[in-house]
Structure formats: structure tokens, C-alpha cells
Image (tube, rainbow, N blue to C red; front, top):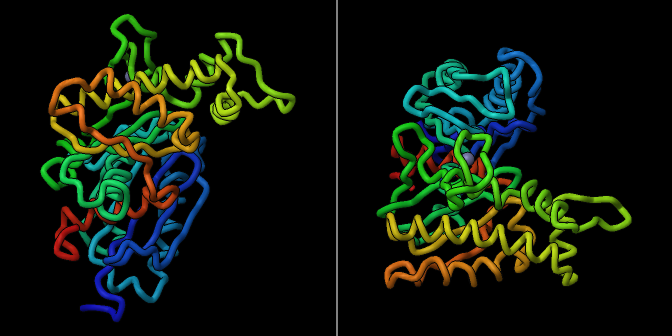
Length: 318
Ligand SMILES: [Zn+2]
């Protein structure tokens, strides 16, 4: 059965602040969207209620009969092999069987679950900055640092859907303990809160508005403040070391960097490109490009759809 608009994939993007959904067509357009606030402090059923409400909105659309699969990108950790999620920012969900819970309202359609970093990667590979690249690392640098891999032209999600989690690669052997249980992780140095924390610890002070976020540090860096510049340079070094390690392991051609911290623009990208030359020195790593992500806020939905389409074979795979 085909609708006039062709086969569709329903996508869900599950995060700690919002649960978004969309019907996505074969060109990556969002035909219908729905959204609920995540009741992050509610119990497991309350959070699932918000997911169901989003699905109900989508199922009420006239295009719903054309949906061939449901793709879910969720804040992690996820276990795609079991279909479970344990998002750090949704305490009521620990080992929550999200794929099973979605299967019923999905009317028996195939349900594909991936982590949000893998979803963003699928989106950038399909429609964004990694398009046409067979080997890529995509990363989200925001309140945390996540990522995913494209290898040999295909999304490489790994057995549990977490492959490419660059944020928890250690780049500082004697570095600070990380909430993940490791030490000296990329995220512990390069995430927005850690950029801001380090700037403040070094003596940087906010302007009259009192804003102490990484965006405020970025504004100071843009104005030439040496302490703000130093904090971004440290983040750039951590990201560069993680990208270089990835390039040495699996030969990526491009590293795509998105998320709120990437919004700092050249304040981040200029030192990142410079530092990458220091860490990626081998002949087969030296040409790795670093580019900004292009899909922004819709990447989670577009990517969840792309991951499901690739797995299930909708649109002949993407
Ligand atoms: Zn860590």
C-alpha cells in the first residue's frame, strides 16, 4: 500500500527536555511533527505517556498508513540489542523496554532504536555535512559530547547502538574523574559546562549579565579574552586528540562537529583545525577534515528515520 507521498518513516527523538516525533519522507522532509515536554521527574509510565501522545498525534495524520517503520533516537545509554534505554537525564527509565513499548502503538511495524549520537550521524551522512563520505565521525558537543561513525559507507551503530561515543574516549591519562566512571574523557574537557567551569577556575569572569555559560565564554573569546581563548583551546585539543585517535583506528575522512558548543564557530573550529595537525600526524590521518554540522535541531528526527530506513530497507536503504 502506498500513499501519494510514498513510503514514510515515523521518527522519535527522545531527550531529557523534549520528546519529538515526525513523519519523514524519502527526501528527509518532516511532513508532520509532534512534540511533548519530557516529564523527566515523573515515573516510567508518565514518560512513556508523553511518547504515546506524540505517537498518537502522528498516527492521526492522513499520511500514517504510508509509514513503513519507526526509528527511535534516544539519549543514552541505550541497548539497541535489547531495545532498552537508560537516559542519564530521565531517572525513571533504567533498562526501560522502549522498543517493545513503541511496537504496539506502531501497529506491528518494525521499530529500530539507536543512540542519539548515532542518529545525528545518520542524519549528517544522509542529508548533511558527511553526505557522500564513506568514512566519517560525527559528534555533538553540547552539555555532553556524543557521536557516531559511518564506516565503509554505512552507519556503524555497533551491537548496542553506541559505537562512536567519542565523548568517553580518554585523552588525559591522569585527568579528572568522569561521571561515566573513566578518567580524562573528551567530554570532561570539551563539553559546554566543562569549558565554562575551566574558564571560571582560571579567573575568567562573566560580563554584567552574569552569564557563565560556554556561550558567554565564547563571546569573551571572540573579543580576545585570553582566559576564554585558553579554555576553548583546551577543549579543541581534547576534541582533536579524540578525532586523531579515531582517524588512526578506522581511517575517517571527515569529522563533523555539531551541538551548542559548535555554535561558537571559529572560536572552536580555528584551534580545533590547528590542534588536529599536531595530533593527527600520520600520513593517513593528516588529511582529515573538520567541518560544522548542518542539520541543527532536526538532526535527531532525520537521523532516527535514516537509521530505521537503512536497517529495514525502506527507500532501498539510505
Ligand atoms: Zn567519561
